[in-house]
Image (cartoon, rainbow, N blue to C red):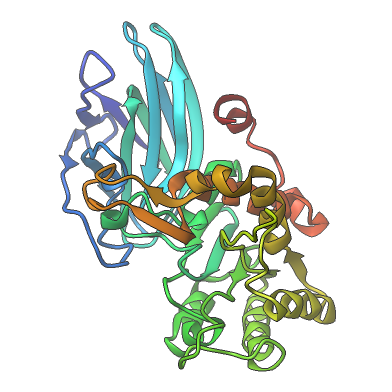
Length: 366
């Protein structure tokens, strides 16, 4: 059943939504507390921004939903971003002139029986939403903190998986990556088993591990031994469900040598992934190489805005600022997600389903 939601205010913002279908009634916007634990069911999209806003929460069945949104205002200019779920970026700073109404579309994955949306940006202007269930392929993500849905209390820490929906015009994203996990611990905690219950024919499973496989603790794996064994288990799981596995080399850290070139901190783990993809005949996105080219082109100073380098008191939760060379600022997550999407479109077997470039993104957000 299609759900139509309309802003009942005369101007695009502030927002106050009502249903205009058979179940007509007001849908409240909900203020929610910041979450400092990585649990996507507890973080709400309105809390992923410098200026927090309430979230629109609509009870629905789990699945994929197509959302068409009318943005703009009769009298005011707008600059609107939309986030969903646990901070997934659906639209980023869409500009509208006074008197201009424009439509945008995206697909949201729901796994907690609530469709959660937030309208952010400098001047959000929203007229209406049309929401309906859709059967379409889903990109499932397995990985670590560089990929995961970071919790709202850690914003602007952002995993590239939170930014990947920004680039898609077909298909949904279901992010199951978790901070601190290795290829081994992810399986031991039952997370791959959970993914197996959700994967279906035509879906993708993107697999990126390596950062924590290097650890000298119970998470650690040897690159040409059990690391390969565990990665092969992800591949087999996807194949058994009719989904397409995609191995990924781990994204680089911001580790520059004195000569301005990146230090390869992953070493044999990168070579192990490439070799396994060739041995098993599965797709591989060499994110290590792609991120190396990006970071070296930007240089030591130019890469700081991509990572969690923040000034003291720039964000209230980080009064002393941050200097993190592993994890991404929202800006960096978007750029890495761009590389991941590029890698998807370079795979002949994936291009037909997910390869249509998001023209709106290219025009408005580059």
